[in-house]
Length: 433
Image 1: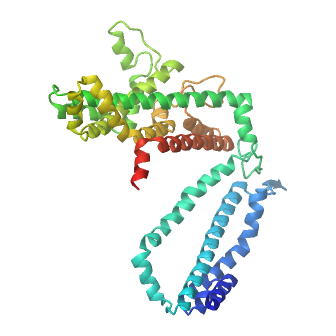
Image 2: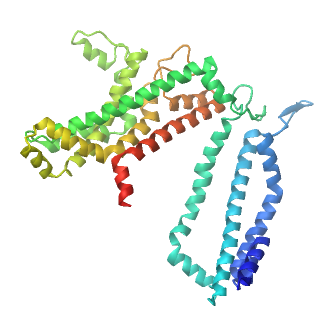
Image 3: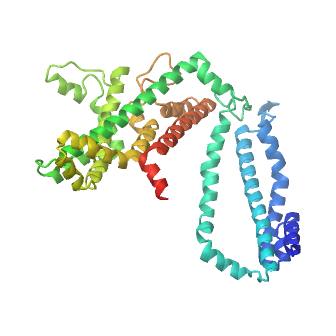
């Protein structure tokens, strides 16, 4: 009784669509045949060059012959075209596998005496039962080519020597260098000093900016929620204004306020007898400034989140604590804080991960400055992400920037996955499912 199944499988392996035609699904079979015909035409003219290109990255640089420029291979274009062709090949292989499985599954139904679906019935089945999968196909393909492919491209650049001034196409070709870029980043003194300095500040910044905004928001939310506070709606409105104003405007205004010896902040401090502080020109005070300004921008976000959580805590939990003789501090420590942390832990982790890549807060306020003399293209307040930006757009050190990007991804992904798995809210969600 396996004759239908075996024949359909063998035919679909020989050529896409033959198994469907054998199962009397002629339109579906013709569609598969057309897909394969187009794939053969495309890959016969592109696959060989793509495999050559991704291995060699080109072998003929642009050169001047008899006073005229002769165009050569452009390593970056070759790499991108090769990636596109290989991804299309992967998609084609997936479709080929689907074709074999479809033919075999339909043949199994024929063996049981079930009539194969017509093309119209197949369309109806997809719309009724597989609509979500079919609808998500186009977005998935878009994500593959516009999100996944650029990430793969960035990762591959980290293993090349693509950087100014000696390896910029089309004048020069680029080559694969393996892990040399990562080795230079962590061991070569000119780069490693900058890398470890920027990495250390990035971690300090992420911790301090997350802790200050979160617990600052917690404090403000608790104060507004106190029984004796009047005009709570007015206080909430006033404190939400920094969040309501676009961050771009807030940061640029703060940059002007803290700027220079005679900036508004220093002038105000002068009225009280304090000398002007180098808020944006001294490395230490510049770091203090970005953390303080980030509190101004970030505390309202945490305040809104925590105020929403406070309204969900059952009143009887406080009443039970009062019966047990708990004072206000004990009620906060035993009831309020655990409930807030339980609910907001995933958001707290996301805030920490986001602060590692908080480009706008640093770049709009200080541009990564002040300059540090022994740093490579980085300033005292640069994070890894702003340093990556400078390496890419200002210095054309694409391979080094790609290596930094990979390290950022590994840090954020490792921290987020580890802590999400350890949070109680995540564990209880798994238990519910």
